[in-house]
Length: 292
Image 1 (cartoon, rainbow, N blue to C red):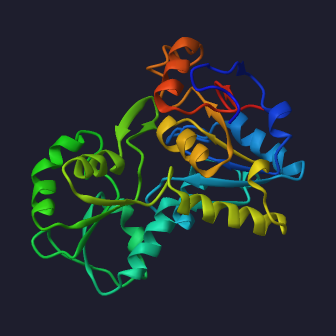
Image 2: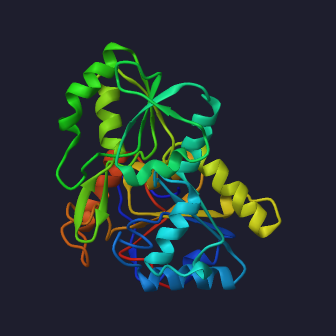
């Protein structure tokens, strides 16, 4: 990270000149490769071209589901498998935590669609009054609810000093042209109330360790961090996660920060610099959308 966080780097329209200097790309999924409704063809093409040139692409996502379930979703959204070598999800990391707590009962906070995270782990579910710990995968109704709707439940959890695993540290994510809240919003509120939270995905190191290991397997060679580029649209998870892990980041503006940056196609560079300054982190480069 060579740029001062008080200065916004120039916006590039094509990533080919930059991306060629790396062996591995760790790309965010939601907001970079698709928007929850449809794939972004230019982004998929860019990742596929990088792979054709000898690079390895690992999709790294805070989806609260196992990577196999993420792949099925990407297939439905028409994200070509040529765009990536492997996927690592925060759901994969969460499953590892659940496996370590085998025999303990779980209160799940989140929708029915996330239950695949528990498949094959022999989990016994329980209400807040008797559960041993909590796995938060999201909001029960993310179209209508916010984290504030969970204050009473969180207070009950706090009274019992229940440990929470946050299976998706994202606060919000794009779904089509709107933003919906994620598990990270509930987890942050619980942590602010004094609760004990483990965040399974970005910006924390375990998911990056797993992604680099998969990249090394794809390349059949060790991976040097200076040769790894992270791509993402979130300051909190992608940019700060890359900085903490010691790798470069390409920041995509037409994602979850698009509204605060003024316009999806013409972001305000002053506002961009202010966001980076507030985060104390700067990307290697900035692009509106991922395109070769």
